[in-house]
Length: 113
Image (cartoon, rainbow, N blue to C red; front, top):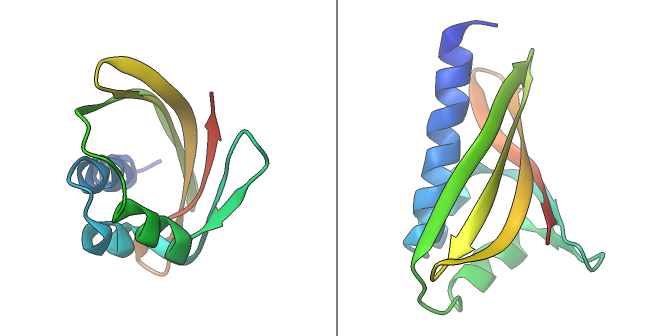
């Protein structure tokens, strides 16, 4: 695994966190692949347009992201972490990234309580 692949994925993961922190759908749109989808604990599946629209309505909160792991497997990578809002643990997540051509993009996330 070339170190630059892990660096690229970690930078993208940090950009995801920053976009969420700033509630900025424009930033997030650059990170997510067009066919991105999320899976939530209640069984709900969310697609890219839904997430971007929902970000516009997120209430202000002090967010903190904690990364627990990051691995690259060829053209696929995963990161795992926890999100805290206003000091309380909100969720844990597993994010999946894929290299498409020469660029990495987020393709999925699994959120758990």
